[in-house]
Image (cartoon, rainbow, N blue to C red; front, side, top):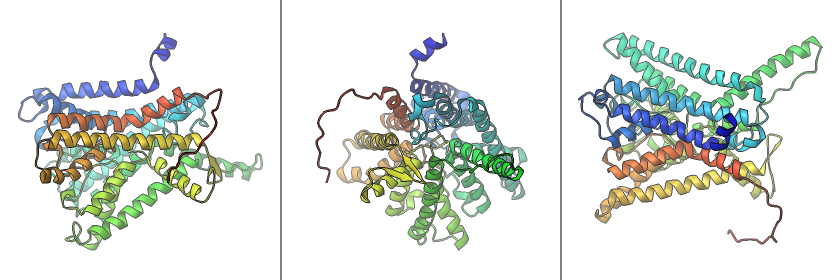
Length: 470
């Protein structure tokens, strides 16, 4: 029976079906009258959109979550967020560790780099690490927020304070961006402690447990290696992080630093103009963190300059780390292709990084994911322009191009930032954005899986011929 199941279901189908089941359950529950404060049923399209957004940990919302949904509805959303974040990490990591060479594309190059060197028998320990670390970090974040908000008398009762802390800690760690506060976290723009806790949770969830597993193994090797060397019973172990982890850490740190400085310089006389120097830098840092698929905002993006919006879209498109709660093409893909471009400009046929040679297969898969992502965003944006501006005056249509394109990139990156277009979408537009969120969350993984299973080597080669590309 197990063999039959394996033959019938492609691993990509397992991921798609798991998401579809959670979304369907969430849609059904959010359609119930008890899910809203008014006691009226939501239109099914809106319930579906909200369920997709929560399960795909995006954060785009047709309605204000706190004002529209009852406690039951909010708990349904929170459950979808937790299952969507933890479930995808568990599925992807389990496939990576259990697959070995057959599913090499599911690893750090579907996740962008090979992960087959991890022993298969450690799968239980790795899944345990994911689950325990997720709930531990979420609990720690909730505790810090609850204590801070209780001491500052942010809410009337401690029960409300604790609920808000748990909701936003889970939402932040899962990079969901859902909030029950009006205007997201705008009211906390002068509260550095809250912003720091939220950004730390976002980064922790966005780095991914593939990296955390590497860091744990690196620390273990370093400790045991020193002990063995001191005892003289074995040779010293030289610990090292994988190339994947180095790409993720360096690229993520660079994007955070460049984003923070750029947002401060671009918005210091605009969005950040009325804030003290310390708060300005803190909010610039927040602006650099949240496009990495988190979706919270401490400032109104509708008032941001064009350069800042372009930078935000670039960060949303890049996204977070493979095997994390975030979306996008992934930082390792971006870092890998940038390094490969520099290598080619220097005349190198292969990419050498950190005293390792990156496989051509990893580079090919990274390029495939990027091309597919660009195609998806462009096609979806074009469809939205048709459904939302068909028959509208040319100038009005042009004025909606940037907000709709921003919405599309946000949906693909499962970010949740918006320029106010989500509530204005037609039913057809909501379905398009929901599809983009779904494909943005599960699509790159599914594509990589499909490539891995269909990859075959031809038994012959035709004569080679060049094609002009410049």
